[in-house]
Structures are given as C-alpha cells and as structure tokens.
Image 1 (cartoon, helix red, strand yellow):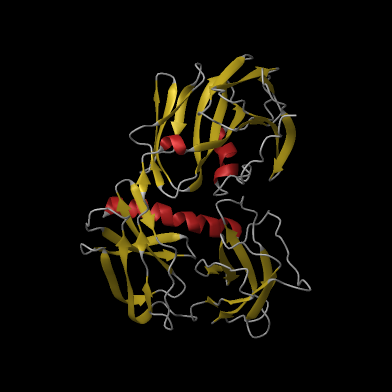
Image 2 (cartoon, helix red, strand yellow):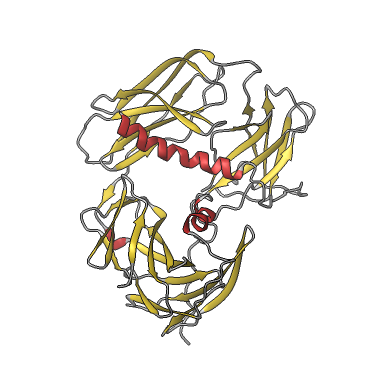
Length: 434
C-alpha cells in the first residue's frame, strides 16, 4: 500500500499545486472580469457557513492542458447574503473550472466542474465548515468500479481512498480496498472533515489512474465514481515533438542546459515506450545529466544519447532534463527527436552571446519577461529530416552580479505547474511555399 499511496498522493498533489499557485498568487496580475451587457454564461452560488458573509472574494480558475496557465479567469465578491455572480462571455467545454475563496486565512475550493456553452446558468456553492466543527458525522459511501479496456482479462485491483486537505495542501490515505473480479469497490465511513476533498486511485502496471476530487457533505453523503483504465498501445512512432526548448544559464565554471520538450500523443490510447525507448543525442561535451524520474517516466543515458521510457497520456506532456557543458566559447550540437517541428534557444542575454548555426529557416528573435526576469528567445522551425540543432556560444564573460543558479532558474518554471513560457497550443503551420 505504501508504494501505491505514494504514487497516487503525488498525482493528487498536482491539482493542489494549481490551487495553491493560482488561488491567490500575489505578484501575478489578476484578470478582472466585469459585467458584460450580454454574458454567455453566468456562474452563481453562495459561500455557505461563512461568518463573514459580505465582501468575501471568490475566484474562478480554469484548468486546460492545451492552455498556458494565466491566473484566475475572473473574480468577484459576495453580497450581504454571501451570494456571488460571475459573468463569462465565453467558456471552453474542454476545460475544468474551479471556484475558490479565502476566509480567515484558510483556502477553500469546490470540486472541478465543466461549463457547457449551451448552459446559460451554472450554480455552484462553496461550502465552508461551521466554526468549531472538527469532523462531520454520518454515513458516507463512495462506490464504483475499475473499468478496463475492451479485451482486457478480468482481474482485481487495489484502490486507495485519500482525504485531501485543501487548506494545508496535504493528502492522508484513509483506506484501501481490493476490487471484485469485475472491478467493483466500495468505501464506507462514518466521519469526514468538512471542506476536505476525497480522491480515488489505483495502479495498472506502471500507469497510475486517479479520479477527480470528490466532495461529500451532509446533503451529499454518497458518490458513484468509476476509474477508467485507458487503452495502452506500443506506438511510440505516433508521438509528435512540437517544440524543443533549450534554456542556457551560466555557472561559475560551466553552462547549465535545461531542455524542455513538448510531446503530443494524438491517439486516444496511452502510448507505452518502455519496450522501445525514445532516443536523441546529447552534445558530446555534456556531463552531469539529471532528470526527474517517476513510475511512468524514466530517463537514462547510453553512449551519448538520452533514452526516455514513458507512458504518454493522450494530449500534450513535457519532458525535462538538464546537463552541463564546458564554460567556454565554442559550438555545440543538440540532438532532436525525429520530426521535431520547432526548436528554441533561451537565455538571459547577460554574460554571453548565443546564436543558432547554419539554420535553413528564418530565426524569430524576441525578448520574454516573467516575474522581473527577462529572457532572450531565438525560435526557428526545424527542417524536414533535421536530426540536430547547432548553436554557438561567444563573448562568454563572468558577471558576478548576474549568475542564475539552476535551483533558482528552474523554480521560476516548475512552480507554475505547466511552464509559463511554453505556449502549448498547436503551433501555427509553416507558411506555404511560394
């Protein structure tokens, strides 16, 4: 149970990181949405059991793997009865939305929900625990089944129920059940903490499968939740490599290189590349390779190449690893995955000069800013059958006032859940040849 709960707790924490980052992100600009004359969708409800009924700030968050996170979609305040209204000119049916608020220094949020453009009014309440309430007593039940792909042999699964404290952003395993041969499971318990969310998870080989957050209350003591095991295919050749971003920063005696590769799985099935790993060449001078390892993603180096074994979910995901290069003026070559569409070179623009070498397509140069930092970007479309990208380091100089160490540099990106810098919408097609 320890391995299962550890894996599932990590997955459940992803949603909490989003809430913690974007619920009240001091330093980020909030998008204020007023009352349009003709709103397409009205999200309304009340903050229940709040001792401070009026003036409670409510924010609406949007989570969509195809959109870069941009803080709350909208915010408003409750009236004297604790009610709120949020008007939206447009909504995305593919997105998951969530309402959140802060009362008495504590964070509270709803379970994720969807918005249908055809539905003009959506009512969602934010339930807060009564003052002094520790545990809500009653008869609570969560049941469902683990649904396997067509053709899979019947088997039992171990399903874990975790309680998620949205205030402290922590998870606590409550109990584990083994399913019947047809995948049925049931959890029954007599108390829960008001405002906390529940989470179900199981493992299918290397793949972890979890539910959305489940919130029970006195008015909703039961829930039926299925865990769907996706189809798994060994089809690594179907993966698309949309962008290879190369972040370069200075060390006192070397260059720190962090590669972020945006991968798209266009299939409805999870792609398993453990039997046939994805490979691409590292610069011959690379050393001190590091990568985040996990149950469903493994990195290794072999004869100057990086090998990636992963369970790629449908949609887009990022690969991230880092290594060092000698801190001297010279040319370096970075390997590309087959069919990479675009590559981008990013650095601070201070202490050294970087430039692509022998690029067949036009280089798009821009400067990007985030949280007081400024980065120089050199983006270029990759030519067909191109297997590597070469860049040159020149004018290398050590400015003691400006050395970005990797921990600081990576936190700028990692704390955002998805990288703010990567625009993960489908890249625009290259212009047609004249």
